[in-house]
Image 1 (cartoon, rainbow, N blue to C red):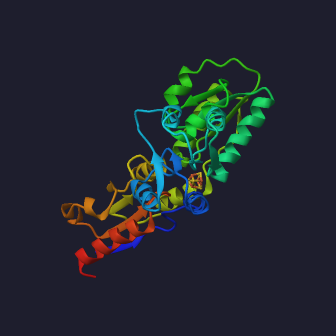
Image 2: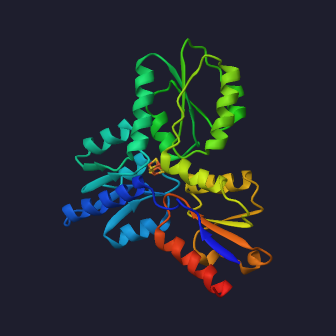
Image 3: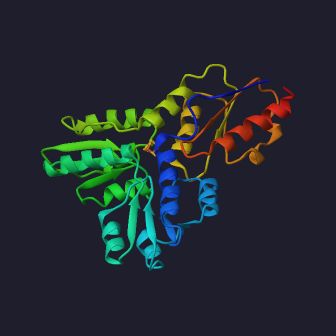
Length: 289
Ligand code: SF4
């Protein structure tokens, strides 16, 4: 049995940067409460690491960011790598709170592109995941942005405009994006398209698509992480027989290791390196290598 790590996999520059910003902010404000509005990245181990560093994560899946902010009266607020709406920034400022923005540069690039096209009078079609913070931040920019999450959503669109611009959430599947673009071109032949899957996401996805003789692929990451889920989807589309999303090595079920020869391990862009290492160590110990 052979165990190999897919390269690249794991942390991207945006996540490393956001974690660094959060820790730096706490170091600069040791006496004040420092909060992250939402999960800095979608990984509970990262949230725990930040909590140990004295940084409080404000997260409740049943509460909006506005509601979470109602619970804070002092300190510093950190905005996550996924981006933030202007309304939230204004609310933070109106409460007299300081803020630090850890939005990833790739997310900002897509947002700026959308703003430019809105200023030019375009309607915007945006391929993303409903409820995901990156998509929510983008949708807050204008009601001329139309969210689609599937080909069926394209059929339901009712846009009448001279100019339509299309782009996407940075962590979507590049394969699904290609299908969406084909379908969009049929519906709106003159649409202007700019794909925006970030380099970290596409390189991790393409590395899976290039795997040969893979019997079992473990994808290590949080169930809420979009880019982690996309890695699983790409593995299945590539025809890998068994693709399993696990959060830690403890999720490995040894019955899955029967009759497999080549095992690969990949991880989402928000998965800490030690979790990937633990999975590889556990598998290595199991095989007695
Ligand atoms: S996955 Fe891409 S967009 Fe998201 S934080 Fe990483 S580099 Fe930035």
